[in-house]
Amino acid sequence: MILDIQAIKELIPHRNPFLFIDQCEIKIPGEHGIAYKKFNEDEYFFKGHFPNNPIVPGVIIVEAMAQTAGIVVSYKLKEYTEKSVLFMSVNKAKFRKPIIPNDNVSFEVKFINRVRDVYKFHGICYKDTIKVSESEFSAMITYK
Image (cartoon, rainbow, N blue to C red; front, side, top):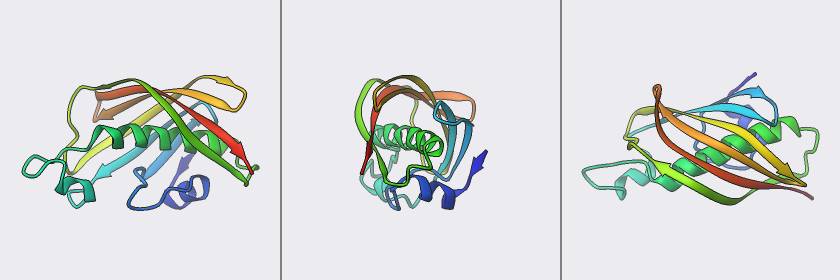
């Protein structure tokens, strides 16, 4: 199942300028997904990170992985409309190559385990087929 930006906005609360996903492919609901993003040259953070040498900040790469996981989990739990997916922790983050303006990247997330309402994922960011970053992170599902 491929989700466009409108379907993504129905699953997670993020909006511009803090929505870092353009499209998401759900491979296995709740377990595996791949999101896609083109970092345009007019992204707000490029002005300060860094002038004359713009690169996507690592925290935004990790946030995009977390948003991808939020979409994957929320898609599985979409019948629960009164829920939130809250980012809890990040571990083992590695940044191997920079992402620069106009790069097209993908964020692949895979479910590792779940303890109650806390989900743990492994995420990898690719530029074309080259792995540029990876991390493990946890998120909690809260119900209102």
